[in-house]
Structures are given as structure tokens and as C-alpha cells.
Figure 1 (cartoon, one colour):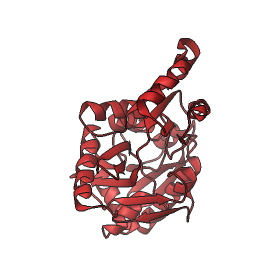
Figure 2: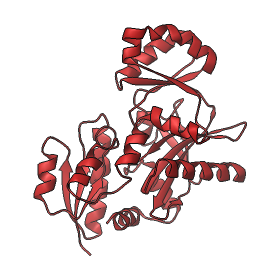
Figure 3: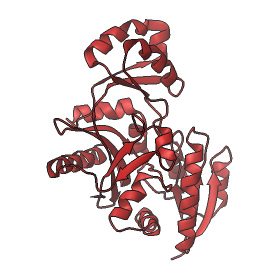
Length: 310
């Protein structure tokens, strides 16, 4: 049945361009499926625009701030408009990596050891003096990243102690809190979960040409090799799926999520990096790759997301 579907895209996050590409591709698929599409860029008029249209469903094609932190979900809840992806609670928890990692640790879900610092601790508590202790505890190399940001923005892998302060300053330009995390040498995996009765799609193995899967590696064609299904052992695959589903359930996700995991090469431990509530839908995005490997075309994937969200 034909529906009026608002595709929410753009916004003011640093992932705006990526979001527009996702939104445009989803819009094209929805039109092929016979739906009426209303494309809405997220700005100060969004409440008025949503309220003035007769909308059956909002497709959230937003990434980063306002789109994956519970903000747009809360607006849609107030307006009684059904929407794609998990609800407010999972978005709030997953967007702040410190909170989500604390939840993982409390439930025994493997995640790389870490410490966090914030701007006020540096300005008022002299936290810079803690860095030698943190480096001693975690070891080098370590990963420095913002606590609330997507698409690997602001992330650096640091090999020497002299480079840590600069990496922290860079990360703090993206978020008020920064994570210093143990670097895990392993296979990077993206595990997509979909459905009201959740099922795991074939995992994507990510092999970037650079040292890690940064923003450019994610968004530009030819910067990364992908293998679907991932080239891991049967035992690693089983552990990966168990952990991914545990994360999906721990953060109370519904309908859709993508869990990013690094599989330790030696010990076969699947360490959880983060959970994404609004996975990309561009031609280089991981969820569509997984769906295709499971036999779903892009239009069929969008159709399933729409049907379970209505």
C-alpha cells in the first residue's frame, strides 16, 4: 500500500554529506516501491514541516548528532509519527560510547579496556598529569577518540606517548569527552541485525588501505576492501554472532542495528567497539552489503525496514 514517507536527512552534524547520500538513495528506492516521498532536511523548521505534512512514517537517514543521539526520535515520539530504527533509549545509550562501554563491561561483553577524560577535568583538575599512568596501564599503541561522534571522525591511533596530547586535543574538538582505548590488533567486522524478530545478516570484513577504517575509508570508493561473509573461522563466527546479539539486546534495540567488532587475531575474542542505530545506506555502506549477501536487493532491504517500522 502506498504510504507518505518522510526521509529525514542532512542536518547539522559533521556527517551531513554522508547523510544526504544515504537519504537520496533511500528516497529513490522508496519511489521505486511506489511510495510518496517527502524529503526533509533537518533544520529549525523540522517540527513545523513534520506537523504540516500527512506522514505515515519517517525514515531516519541521519548520522551523528541529532540523528543518532535520541533527539529526532524524541521529536517524532511527541508528534506520534512512527519511524525507522531503534527508539530514544537505545540511541541515547549507544551515541555516548562511554555509557555504552560501561554497560558492556557490566554485562561481561568484551570491549577494549579504556579510560575517559573530559574538558573540565583538563581545565580544573589537571588531568593531563594522568596521561603517563593511563599509558602505563593500557599500553601503546592506543586509540584516542571522541566519546560522541560517528564515522570515525576524530579518531587517531597513537604509537608514542609524545603524540597523545595532540590526539586528545583533536578528539576534544569533536566532543567534550575523550576515550583512550587499548588498541586491538585484529579483524574489523560489521555485524548488521534486522527484524522485529532479530536476525543477523552476513558479517562484513573491513580491510582499509590505511591503518584503520577512518572517515575517508568509509565514504570513498576504492579506499577499502570488503569481504562478505567475513573470512573468519567457524568458532570466531559463532562468538561474533553471540556477542553482537548480546549488544543489540543490552541496549534494547528494535528493528535495526549494526555492531562494530574487532576480532582479536590470537585469542579469537570479539571486542565490541560500538553500536550504530542509523547505519549508512550509500553505495559503500555496510548494511546494504550484508543484505545483498543475504539475498536482499537494496529495494527489498528498504521495503523490509519500512514494513517492520509501520
